[in-house]
Every structure is written in structure tokens, then in C-alpha cells.
Length: 437
Image 1 (spheres, rainbow, N blue to C red):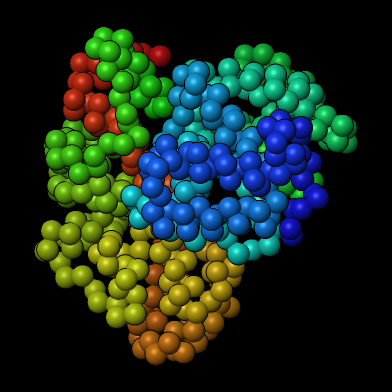
Image 2: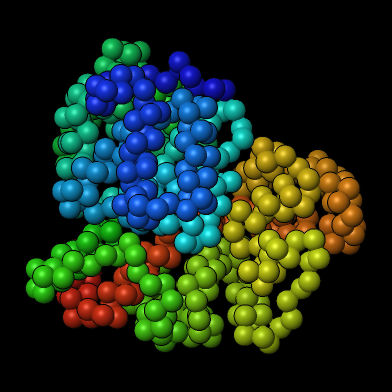
């Protein structure tokens, strides 16, 4: 479904010179941000990716979504409401990077646009943001004041598995078009007050054309922000955590030693032991280990360590080495599963993604095996190899992260490890305070 003329946009102020040309205004915002991120001379790769995403946004008539989100994040950054480095598949978006919605450069980290430029017709933008737990309510108030108290609603949590909405989803709409939504005032604990709440699930919101944004509270964002603020107050030093050297051997040494107390997603004894065995020599190793340390993939950590350290041979997949070689023959990321289906099995991107989602929900996909095997056969892939690759799809789907999400969350850990390495007393002062709250 194309959402043109379907989304119930709130009133959005843009410079009068643009009239109602939201696409043009978004393009200006993006290129202004691109010059701040990359300098005046943009590479052809950078421009190509920007234009690809802008054209996709224009096709689906959703420039306003990103204009609104850019404004929300701009307010947060200007008012020391700490924002996370990024979250989810949209970390692959160069537009989100240029709008300062996240801090992960998709070119630097080798992230492809294919995960954000989906081909399906029911596209609806969905960018999640991790926000300061301590100051998220201040951000909510800004949104309510800007768009009107009667146009901004929190979404009532729903415990149903297939329509669950995170309690920090907010809906923004035109006050005139919101009358038929069931709503009420209710006390919301994390805001410590009564707020307007809409009783509707996320899927219904999108079907009815209502904008929604997920602003998820995250205490680790506060920890990073508070340490940086303490350093600035003590030494006058402003830390640029968005551009850390991910090859910094001093920071990698901290991970190799398993000294990861108070480090986001690495603060557990089991993972500390694996770090010492792996002795990560790159940021990619950290991303892989962070992604493998979860149910369904945990048993593959010893194989990853042995293959990385040259103790175990890496399987040779003649057709799929370009997809699997960076992770030693183990499909760790959702992107790899979809590429196996799409490029190796010759299955359309829409169907490949559908297969993945079915497996993630523990649904049967036997009916797609012959489609995959036939696609492999047409590309000259041996039947024995296609069988093994299909087993990969069955084994890993539903447990894997988007690579972009894994990189963003590992980068948050790297930011904390960098602070712990170079400003240990300030890091420990803040992290100790967080443990007592």
C-alpha cells in the first residue's frame, strides 16, 4: 500500500520559500547534515546513497516523517537530552546519519542501504531511538507543546503478542482527525503524571495513517552523557564520541582482558570469559561476539573463536563465501540470512524477508524450500551446498540481529569502554552512582 494521501500529518512548519515542498526541504536538511558529517566535498558513494534513499522517501511520500523526527532529535541534542548511537535496521540509513538521528556512519561501517530501502509496497517509516531515561519526559513535553496537547498521545501498552506496543510509543496527528480514536487520561508511571493515552496497537495506527515514534528510555545513554558532562566540567574537554577510532588498541585491550564491568551488553561473567578466549583484534569481532551471545546462537561461539584463531577450518561455500567469509562461515546477522535467500536462492527480496519473519515467529516455511533449492540450481549451485545453506536459514532465522543494530549497540559498548580506558575515575564515579539508583 502506498501511503500517499493516507497519512494524517500534523501541521509542520517549514521555511515559506519551500511552500509545501517537503521533499525539497528534507533534501536541504540532509545535504546540510552531510556536509557537517563528511565535509564540503562529498564522495560519489555518499551522494549516490543519499539520492537513493531520498528517492525512496519521495516515492512513498513520507518526507514529513523524517522532518519531524529530525526536529525532535535536534531539540534533544541541543538540550542535553542524551540520544543513543543508533538502534535497529535504520542505522544503515545515510539519511538518518546526516540528520543526526544516529551516530553510525553506514559508509565507515560497511552497512548497505538495501536493509532500509525495502521493495515492498506497504512501506511505513519506523525509526526507533534510545533516549535518556532521566530526561525523556522533557522531550515528550517539547513534542506536546509543539504539536498540541490534543494531538500527541502515548500508546497504551498491549500484552497481546502480535500487537504489543512499547509503552513509550507516541502518536502525533492533526487534532481534527483524531476524534474516532479511543482515548483516555491515565496515570503513566514513568512520567509520574496523568497523560493522554490512545488505546490502539501499532499495526492499527499505521493502517489508519497515524504517525508514531518509539522513544525508548535507556539508562546507558545517561551514563555516557553524564560521564562526558563530568569530564567537560572538570577539564573543559568536549568528547566527540561519534567519531572514535574503533581500531584503538588500548580500548580493544580492555575487552581482551574481560574488564567489562559496567559496559553495556558485555557486563556478564560468561561473555567476559569468551572475550578472554577470543582476544578480539577488531571492532568486528566485538560485534560478532555481542550478536552470538544469545539463545539460539550461543553454541556457535566456540566455533567462531576457533575459526578466528585458526584452530578450526572455515567451511568453503563456493557460492556464498562473499556473504559468510567475514563471519567465518557462520551467518550471524539477519542481513546474511536474507542475502542467502535473495541472492543465492534467487528469491525476491519481499519473499526473502517474509520467510525470515515467519521463522522469527516460529512458523512453518517448508513450502519455500523447493523455491530456494530451485533458485540455487538455476545458478549452478550443487544440491549438497544448497541443502546446507537451507539448513542455515532454518537454524539461524529468528535468533539473529540486523547487522546495523548489532554495530550500533556494540558501538555504545565501545563508547563506554573508551571512557573507562581514558577517564577511569570519572567513569567509575558515574557508573557507581548508577548502580545505587
